[in-house]
Amino acid sequence: MKKIHLSPIKSPLTGTITVPGDKSISHRAIIFGSLAKGKTTITHFLNGEDCLVTIKAFQAMGVEIKQKGEEVIIESEGLDCLKEPLIPIDLGNSGTTARLLLGLLSGLPFHTTLFGDQSLTARPMDRIRDPLLKMGAQIDGRSNGSYLPIAVRGQSLDGITFYPPVKSAQVKSGVLLAGLLANGETTVIETIKTRDHTENMLTAFGGKIKIEGNKVTVQGKQTLTGTDIEVPGDISSAAFFIVAALLIPGSELTIKDVGLNPTRIGILDVLKHMNADIVITETKQVGGESIGDLKITYSELVGVDVAGDVIPRMIDELPILALLATQAKGITRIRDAEELRYKETDRISSVVNILNTLGAKVKATPDGMIIEGETTLIGGQVDSDGDHRLGMMIAIASLICQEDVILTNPDVINISYPTFFDDLNALQSK
Ligand code: S3P
Image (cartoon, rainbow, N blue to C red; front, side):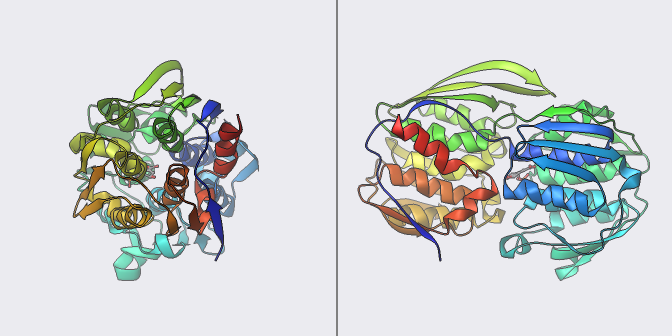
C-alpha cells in the first residue's frame, strides 16, 4: 500500500491561491450540458476523479463531450438523443453521480446498470429509490435497489410532491431531474434548505423552476438550451487551506474566486463564532452563484457548539472543522450530523479514530462528536480510509504535529483535489 511521510511545517502559510472548481457544480454542469440542446462550454471544471466519472457516464450514453483539463465542451442534441449504454456504467466513488443519475435514468427510455467502488457500493440508495418508485420508476438491485449495483428500466414518470426524510441535496436533485422528464409538476419541500446548485443551474440553462422558500417546483417535459458555465472555486476544498492558515501562527492567506453560495458557507459562519479572522469580499455573480475572495489570518480560536440548520450547509467541512477544534480553547460539540455516517466512510468513526491516533481527545456520539481543545497532536501512522476529505484532513493535521505523520492511501485525494499537494507546497515555500 502506498504511504507518504508528512513533516511538521516550519514557516507560516502565506500567499494567494485559487482552488479547483466546485465538485457539486461541475457534476451538474455536465448533466445539464448533456440534457440541453446546443453547445455548453464549462470553464474551471473540477478535473477530479468524481467528476470525470460523470463525463464518462454521459459519453457512454452517446453525448459528445470533449475535456481538456479545466475546460469542457459539450455538443448535445438534447435529452432525446441520449442512448442506451451498451455496458454497465462505473460510478467509481461518486455518490453525487449515483443519486442524480438514478433520477434521470428513471425517466429515460432505456435500460441501464450502475455500479461503483467498495465505498459507493455500501452507501444507501433507498433514499432516492423511494421517491422515484412513487413517480413510477422501475429500479432493482441489491436489497431491492437499496444498494448498487442497480439496474434501471426507464419509464414514463408522473410528478410528485416529496418531503425528503433526509436532508440531502443529492436526493432533492435526483427527484428534480426525474421531474424534468415526468408528466406534470414535481415539488420538493425541504425542512432545511440544502445546497441549491441544481436549481441555479436549471435556471442558467433556460429551465422553468419555481422557488418559494424551501419549496421547489419543476415543470416536466422541458427543453433546455446549452450555455456557458464558469465553475466557482470549491469552498469545500478551500476549507482545508482556511483551516491550515488559522492553525499556523503568522499565516496570512488569500483564496480567490471561491463559491460563496449561502447554502454552502456554514463553515464561514461557524469559524466566525470561533473568533476566526476571515475577510470575505464578494466579487461577482455567475450563473446564480456568488463568487468572492477570502483573506484568512492566523487566529486564536475558541470551541463552539455546531448543530441544527448549519449542518447541511457545511456537511463536507465537518471533518476539517473537527481537526481545527482540537486546537481551539474549550470544548466543541458537533450534533445533528448523523448523515456523516453515510458519506464516503463513516466520517464520525473515521475522524475520531484518526484524530485520536494523532494524539487528540475526541469522542464519537451517535450524531456527531465532542472535541477537547487545546490538545497537542503528536503524529503517527494513519490511513485515509479511502476517503478524499479524510486524506486532506490528515495532511493538514501533519503540519501541526510534533513528529512526522505517515499517511497511507493518499491518492484518494485525487477524487476532489488532484493538485492539493502542489498548492500546499507552493504556499509553504514562499
Ligand atoms: C452533494 C451533496 C452532499 C455532499 C456531497 C455533494 C451534491 O451530499 O455531501 O459531497 O453535490 O449534491 P448530501 O446531499 O447527500 O448530503
